[in-house]
Amino acid sequence: METCCKLEIFVPETHFEAVREALWAVDAGHIGRYDHCMSYSRVMGTWRPLPGSTPYLGAESQLSEEPEVKIEVVCFQSRVEETLEAVKAAHPYEEPVINVLPLLGTGL
Image (cartoon, rainbow, N blue to C red; front, top):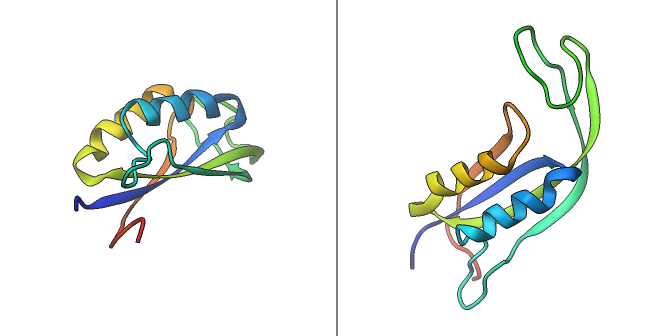
């Protein structure tokens, strides 16, 4: 059984579909005899763009608070880099929040 990672990705609601399609295009969300497996939930995100940034939302030096979607999906460890590239290509943020967590197992 190949080692998997869990990705947590925060994306504005406007780009949820594009990021989801990018994930599925690289086979993220493949668990056993199922594919396209993922969870998502609406969350509120906060950030403050620092000087020199080019924010997708918000203004430099001002605290922003916006609704986002948190995507949770697994991917094979051997495909993490490819998956991150696909997400970044579909994601509008200059610095997208993507957490990569190693898993001891999935679909147990």
